[in-house]
Image (cartoon, rainbow, N blue to C red):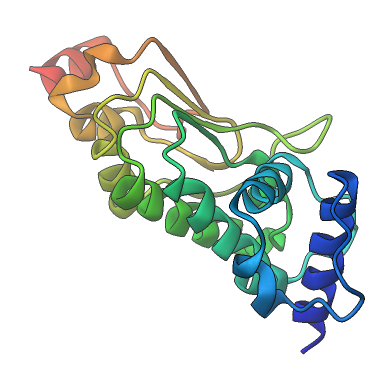
Length: 194
């Protein structure tokens, strides 16, 4: 499968950046056999580097990026930035992968303090959906969240967000997202919070 071969090439190139020379026949199946420190460096680099290709492949998400996200979450990060991770995703599948990654975060790293998804495109944000109950329910499980930034892929209905935020959301210091367009009054917000 070409996606696995391409993923192995990427891992080899990243390992070389850290001074590790992997064999020419290195395969993706050998990734977890690498030294733990090197795995962590490669995972950090993959989670921090945005996709530079004009082509986004769904198979690359399945073969490389989703397993990398799982490994990254297992390290117990305090901050999770999904910007680079989701930049590898085809546009029509971004919301699906946002939900999937948020579900994993809520299950494997629910004590994170910061969750970010910044605008990838330089001049505009792309929105594909309004956050649904499943996404908001996953956000609710993040009990120690101080910073929530979702600048693209989905907008959020403010009343739904207020309703679903955990009671411990007093820790929340910074909230940035695109509001779902609807008619709302201050009284609606106050009555929803009580």
